[in-house]
Image (cartoon, rainbow, N blue to C red):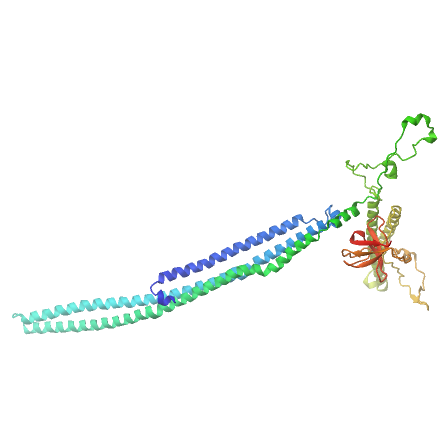
Length: 531
């Protein structure tokens, strides 16, 4: 069914319907725009929320919590939420591009097309109205001239019958009647021609022109409805398109929850906070009733009386478990900490100093090379300009070497293994020629100056040790990168030989089948010792 046939007389209805259809498109575009604004605000709030609860790297609680699986899982959830927010932003962007912008452009085209069709209809109607006016004009003229002709004929007949009228009067009256009759006949013919023309145009207007325009408007409206329907589908498909990624974000949150390991967290808490102190022994009974019979040599004053005596140099510490402890004074050698924590802090400080020392050594090497280049190519620079930097770097190296020795001593006193990350030694000969002896060893033709000996080498922890027999085996429960000096990497499920048990510091020494040895966190493996 088409509008041109069924709605031939409903021009106003068709015009109103097509206008309301365009308004519906505008309303839908506005709806989608508001939806995109909601999505963008939602994404922004999610990002702000993730940022708010994401602990900064400088946070004081991070060093203590970063190894806890529950803490790491929470950070994973925050990261996933941030990614989820990104997908909500993508939904808003895609809706804006594929629906709002596209429909707005299409809507403007439809408006222009509809305006063109309505202008054609108005033009056809104006043409028909003009023809109808011409018809009415010719009809009225025909009516007027026919009446005039009738009056002229009656007047001629009357004059002819009048006995007083002259022959000239009669002849004149007849000529006048004849002329009027001729004019009336011409008006009649003109009226008939105008009527025929109008009927033809009216027939074309109602059976050709307007049905064609109405059918064009129908096609326009159907295309609008079809486009709007696709816009409705895109409203859903745009979100469906990112659902796999959103599902991955949600799966990541679920995985973060399953990665929480309460046993591992408990072991981490023990490892990070174990003091190394022994529990206090029983307090001995002192029988004061026998005091008068005892001599000073029999006195029990020299025997331990309780936990304070048993704890040696830590007697001053308050060991009541639930009493409020005062904050200890921080010392450079970390003696304010329990033994276990002291060893860890000393080892950490030693690693930091060694890294700083390595940077200074690298800088010294670069300065010496630059000085050598300046000496060989004076046009590139003055070697003397580097003297102050070289001197300052040498002083820094000596200071850091002293700090390394100092912390190594303290670590040794604390019962640590003293494993110091070694750095690359550098020797600069300042242009002296190196030669190679027949046995492959290097020898210098010139004697190096004292500046060549300012660099020391820290030996690796395992270089001079004999190969120890395994005392058991272990299986890795987690991946461990082994980035620190003295450690060894491992993969989840990997089996390693145990060379040395955990001495209370949370580290176990292991060996691979290829001979590589190193330390791994005890809490990362399950250990089975030989019986």
